[in-house]
Image (cartoon, rainbow, N blue to C red; front, side, top):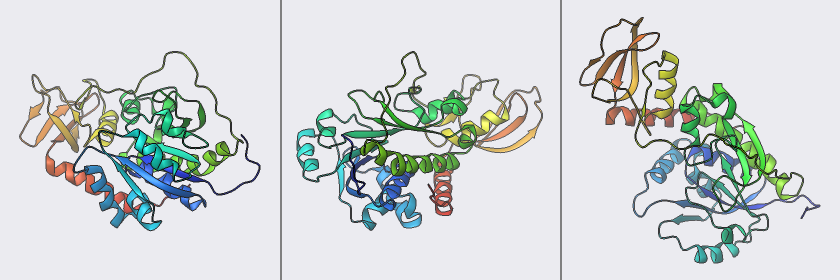
Amino acid sequence: MKETAARPLTAVFFVDPTPLSAAPLHAWLAAGHRVAAVAVYHEVGHSPRMARDRFVARLAPRWSVTAATRRHRIPLIELSPPLDWDALVDRLAALGADVLVSIGFSRLVPSKVTATFPHGGVNIHPSLLPAYRGPQPFHAVVRDQAAGRYGGLTLHVMSERFDRGAIIAQAAAGEAAYRQRPEAGFALGRLAARLVSRDLPRYCTGDLQPVTQAGGVWPEAYLEPGPLVLAPDADLKRLRAVLSMFVPSPGAAVKVGEWTPRIAELSRVLGPPSGQSPVLRRRTLDMDLADARVRLWRDERLLRHWRRLRGVVALMREPVSV
């Protein structure tokens, strides 16, 4: 039903506590709308993602879910298995919210939950649907070198199956946004903020009608367990992209004889391809690419922590703008 009068809307956010979720949450609030609650899911016990988000809240609050809940006094609902959806329905119904917004939430929200809201539930999916349905679209797009065609975000209606609902709006990111991991996160965060603050209200008022997803066969967003193994014919550009997007998680590796060592950083370019065999050391690896011979740092815990710290520093320097 179309609403004739514009008014502030109230949403409940179901999120993964990452910058991609924080940016649209802050944008929704900045646009004058309200948030009745924020729900996060994690296994029983310590949640590394929540701990990291709390750390980010102190240094870069505009990219933190925790910072938004604290500043605006939004109730935080922490969900753990086993999920009692019936009890949650009663709790959500009491909030009187208009719409449920899901961003990176790892569990399928049943229809009895979305039916609690007058405008149902919507989800932001990090690819241009119907391409790359599934749990790992960001990395699958990079793996397939498909960012120029399918990189971006889709705002869609939630349905009984993951990523199958009608499309409300889309925002393409372009290949350039996927060259470095921090920059990719910033670009997608801003696009998510735009979809939530500009397009979602138009959907709720009936001014923007969702469109059924196209049929046919589309690439899917599933990765093999473990790190991405760099192809033998990879060039320097491909190496940089894989290191930026796949390290520290899910990781990157190369094949060296019977070994598949994980790699973390490009140390330096040694020159053109030498034709020599790879040289594997305790902390480094020298090897030929299609267009260069390079020295790589092997993956170590200290380097992983260093990359995460660099990511937080990048968040501190980056403004959120819609």
